Length: 196
View 1 (cartoon, one colour):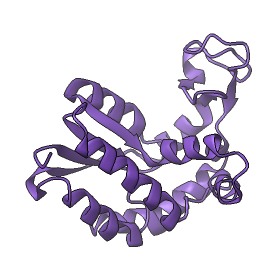
View 2 (tube, one colour):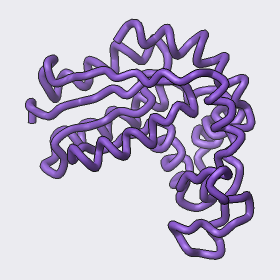
View 3 (spheres, rainbow, N blue to C red):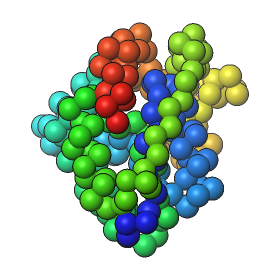
View 4 (tube, rainbow, N blue to C red):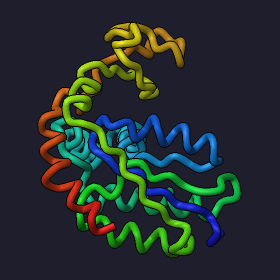
């Protein structure tokens, strides 16, 4: 258990963290844990939950999930993966997002592995490229599969990964607020990385 590797994959919104994490996870037999994906799935699985709806609105407005809420969900999943036998490691895509998440998240990870097994990778992408990517991204309304309009996928198309008529491509809600997301990243998220 304490020999499993943990990678913190950091970077601005739309930098491609999720895409890179999927490639690394497959190649290394690591579990890809996206704080945004985990939060979105929890919200979807708990539609009548008042806190879930509050977090959904917060994220859609360009903000980040509240720390206490996302940390609780992340810690459970991290424990499950690092104590299990299925994966050789874990890639954390996104967290920590704010300074107050760094210490509790790191301390939780260090309970399950050795310090030398923790790596931090940061993706550096020009701001102009991030904005272009946000304008061209569409997602599956059912499963969240991500596609690019530059590859011929458009809003309203059927998701080619799901092949279900109810799984249509939509504009991702938080991509609409990319300017606000970049401001949050630059003022709040990036400074938290320096503490990791």
